[in-house]
Length: 526
Image (cartoon, rainbow, N blue to C red; front, side):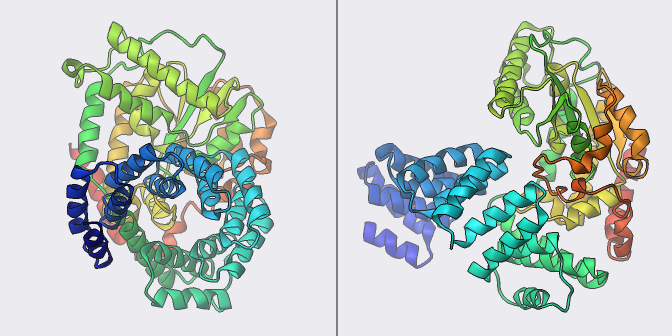
């Protein structure tokens, strides 16, 4: 049966291999060869969660199985479960220190978790143990890029390409940091790769890299074609990983959120925090100025910039799961003993996450843009928190998302239709929060922020109950690590060219404009 399953897997029929192995494991649940093959068959058929179950089963029989740990780390990374990825990669590194990819996986998990200290520690280990490995230099480039050391990042990415001329991750990052002219050998290499057959991830890297080169050279028509190709490839890559857009789910989420957090959310509250800590939540769509606002606030001596923290969404989801079935769809009521107890428990979980990351300042920012979907929950557990909503012209922010490549991300970035749907979801929820939340949301418009910074900063500090601070106007001098795609912009003095950057592509994005206008008009009629 094992031989049969192996042959089926080699022949590219993983679902039949899984069936054979299922029958074998019914007879012998502890056969390691069968479990290994089953895990590989699940991966081949893209049944990612079943593959994880199989590798976890393998580890339950042999906790020192470095292969199982390495595969689990790769799967958890692919699915965005970075805490689990870091845990299993740490075990794999301890068991098999001679394997560089375990350390690369650990570094990538620390990067995703925005743990800069651990990222640099693993980077140093990679460079010391595996100085010739291309991934060592790629991780080195990422760490310098995050820290704002552009020249050193460029040198590291070039070293990665010297070690592996086909490393498309290094190509993309080089194009973003220092786009060469279209006539350069580097750009010709990108054109050559784009014409060839590439896996979806590599194709996305190449197309977005070439788009950056062409955009910088003002070759906007050709750049648009590359953005289109890059978004198609990114969409294909994410579909392979089971990440697809779901408009029906967005509608369900909107309806449920409106039921759970109606008018007056936040007027009554659970007991105030017994510690001297105040939160500032910065929300909006990505590319709407959230990173810039956090950079400004984090320059205040009382504020620690937390970055994009996942805790609010995780705790809000757990609250919904754990509410009694009879109350699951009724409004969250902080005066109800059961709801209040759950809310206090979720707040403790949130705070545990903060302290594990060393965020114990007087004021902490949480800059996860998607927290706009859970502002009702946030207001319930942090009634005195400042909530800053970064808004931006719909067409400008959607175009900026379409041209920004984040690797694996939310699936709505990659088509005009999905961008319009998601913008409507965001717009409707924000309109709800602006109506029902007490205290209200503070709005910062991107266009005003970049054109009239000296007027906006005092209002922002006052709204966040912070004292005046001159350093906030010198935000670009801050040396704090920045992990978001706006890491280059927030390290420069303000410039206004990004406000109407979409106009270079106006003829190409007419369909996006029409979709947004139609959506806004339908909401107004509704």
